[in-house]
Length: 66
Image (cartoon, rainbow, N blue to C red; front, side, top):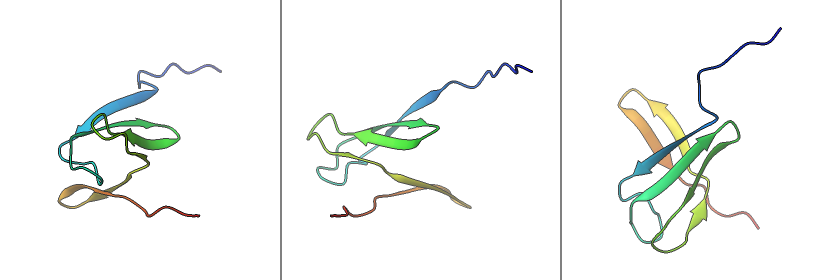
């Protein structure tokens, strides 16, 4: 059975002053694979961790793994 979905495959958001490297606005795209962000100002790339809290959304960044 085929079920049509009205949900888009991805959503784009802007996190004000969200870049951990230069504090510029960070564009974030959220897909089924998770969120990813690329700073247009300094070129930082990463996967922010978005958590729902009772006060709203909390955005954090995990450190790099070698």
